[in-house]
Structures are given as structure tokens and as C-alpha cells.
Length: 410
Image (cartoon, rainbow, N blue to C red; front, side, top):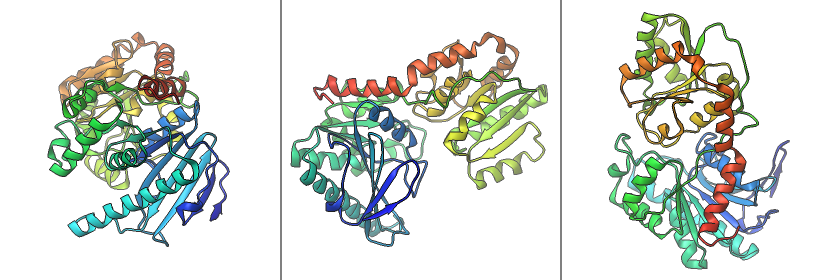
């Protein structure tokens, strides 16, 4: 075992699963198909915030398995503990190239072998957990079915992907028969299923054939995302995302360029995006004095950008229920969003405007009205309402009730 110093968390590294020591009770086990890790620090960060919310009420053990092309050993287990939240990362050596059938088979065999090895070792040492909660069905859902058969442990599923809509290239209907079959089996065998939006929940009902999909929203930390009164020299819009295709960045920029032809009393700040995305945008709008590109920032810096703005704009093609919308609302920002996925579910006339996905004319009208009629919005009230709906306390209790409704008293 190797110890690594960290001022915030205790991190321990093991190379043998049987040597792993846990300080928190092994009762509530989360198997996260997506989760922030050393190899991908932004993957499924909303799941991590869900875990933190629940851990404030009861201890949570999270397991996330992922390949590491730089791993010096075939496998290593990193255990990170902070309060009642324990995160166990299974890093296995694989080049990550899944272009060939042989490579995909190798990847899956390693994924399932090392994850099962870990769970078997933990059960031998600490006994079986009260329940398992899978976050994103594939691939951890197959592990949960295996654990249910082996130890009679009930499992729950939360599906946060927006890929069940028709828009994305990797949408559910475009996936292989193998993938669709296993997702359906996982959803059907779960004790209960939750989603962050009602819109995607209805799609999951159609796919799974069950009518009991619960809605548990994303979290916004009210200690970071809160309203700060500020005087700004010009009306400031902000957009926060990875700037990927699903966000419809090109459509948004075209609309803002049209707005600038009509009036110049505004600016737009883009927060996020890698170097290639930023280079492409700047090449397309080299003289756009109204556009500021900040690039990728830490999650702890996002509140500052929101608090220095008047309005959050999202114009996505497909989404589920973005964290950034509830974070913007928590900062007291009215939100202009498309009706993609569950985006519109957080918006009422008192806190924003919803436009049809892809409708640039409607977006242009919404932007103009936001500037002209901004005084109609009570930013303190927007922030207070969001805090009551999306705080750690509220979402943590929603999960606890989710388990109790199915007979699991955590």
C-alpha cells in the first residue's frame, strides 16, 4: 500500500484488492459508470455531487472503474476518503483504443474482472451491502445484476444520459442490439429507477416498460452558487459548457452576431471549451469585440463568472437536465434556454425564457427582451427558490426517500 499526501482527502493506493481498508460502513454502495477520476476529471461530476449530497446524511462508498494507459501496474486501487464519502477507483492498464473487436473484448474482460475482484474482496471483509446504486446503466449495471445473483443484493439505477433522445449520434436507438438489450435488462431488473428530468424519465419508461421512474434533480452547492449584487458596465450574457456540438455553439454565435448588428449594449462570455474549440470560434469571429473566451476553468471558478453576469444562455440541441442551469439560477441569473431534453423543466416566467431548440429567430427575440425588460426579474428570489430546490440537503433527502420508498432503510 502507498500513501499519498493530500490536504483535503486521505488517499491510499493498493495493488491487491484484499488489502483495501475502509473507514466508513459498507452499507450503501454506488457503482458509477461515469465519475471524475485522474484520467478524466470532468466525467460525471454531477454524480459526484449527488454522492456528496447523500454522504451528508449517510455513509456512501462509490466505486468507479476506468482504464489508465499510463498505469505502471496491471491494476491499482485508489481509495479516497473525505468525511462520510469514500471513493474507490479501479485503474487498470489498457491503451484505451477500442477500434477493433479484439481490443473491445479485452477492455470489457479487464473491466469486469477487476471490478468483480474488488467487490468480492470487500464483501468478504465487510459483508454484503444493504443495496447497490448504479449510476448510468452501462457498464456497471451488469456488475449489479451479477452482485444481485451472487449475494441477493437489490440494486437501484440512476440514468443521467441525454442520449435517449433522437438527436445525438450515439443516441440509444443507434446503439448496437447488444447495448440496447443490456440497458433494458438493467432497467427492468432494478428495484427502482431515477432520472434528473421528467422528459427523459418518460423515454426511459417507454424503453424499460416500467412506469415508476422517479425524478431526482441535479445539485447546486448554495455555499458556492449564490446571488451577489453587482454593478456591470454593460449587459453581460454568460454561457458555460464544454462548447461541444450538442450545445449548438454555432447557432448561438450566429444569433449574437445578429443581435450586435441591432444593438451594441451587451457582451457575451464563454466559459469552458478546449483549445481547439476556442481557436475555431475566434477564427470565425476574429473581430467580435462583444465576445470573450475564458476557456476551461475549475468548477470552483464557475460561480465567479456567473456572479459577474446578468443572464445565462443555453441553446442546446440535446440535453438531460444540465447542472449549469440550476447553478445559474442559484446565482440569481435568469436563464434563456432551449427546450432540449429537460432544460425547460427548471424555467418559469419568473426566472427565464424557453425557446424551441434550434430556433435562432426565437433566441434573438428572447435576447432582446431579456435586455429590454430585465427589471422584471427578482434575482434574489430566483436564487432563493433555486437553493430550496437544488441544495445538497434537498437532493440528499430525495435519494434517501427514494430508497425508503422501495423498502431499503438507509
